[in-house]
Image (tube, rainbow, N blue to C red):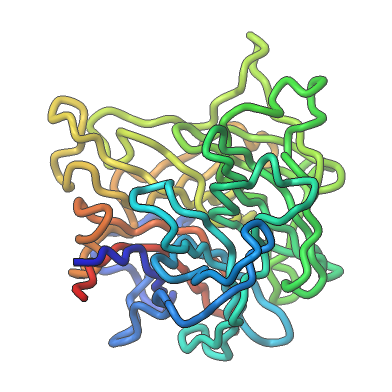
Length: 362
């Protein structure tokens, strides 16, 4: 039996309401799974890559493909996804690289045969080898610069890092996002999951500024925030005790009782800033939300004040998206997983891309 693992799927926002619960008018809703479309990307053992770290060919997406980002370029949706080789067994034990796929309709994908982001003999080697490059979130500026927030993993410390590109293929790595802030105080902090604030302008989803600075929500076990002047160097926001200021954190007896991890880029709307995030349910019966499976990953949303983006105005008490299909309730996370990372506005619809899990028998 071979466990193959977290796959990528998609949900599309049509023009009608969400059927499972009634969402407030500020929240994004109406997401449905396209019929007979999922998963849209699966592992491909035949794709080989000349690994510069090992000086040999490897099946870079042999075991897993999951946790996708998404953006638009030249009238197409591009999905950047995390792929794992088959170098080891166990969560976090393989090497991750980031692949690229393109689609004219958002569902049928054409993949590049080699990754576009991977550990190399460069200035990021100490941060990325042997764990790799993980979990991208991608968006773009008005003038077409693509900005990626991703996790570097050396199997010791996970760091939130930044890379930029003009074509989505060649990426310039800029290093840990917090390396320069506060004299390097947060350079080696365990951190991941960067969701930069975007807005819709002239039909395109682009980065925007809040009070003159770019703004990013980030974090896994809680949601924090940071600001930047250049999209490369980020300064975490601190509280009155000079510690990381918290936007939200897990809530006992709710679907997000174990963690609140940032999802895709946040959206500035006329209601406020909408952040979609991944919530995990506790396994402890006294702390978990008993309406949902213990240990399940579901998706939530918050609304923050655009003038005070650390201030939460509203928060969903139930997930707007949760594991329901059979392939979302098996595999590495048998309790059920929908893990959102890619949200893109394309032809007047929202497309939401997420990772899930599946057992493959071979």
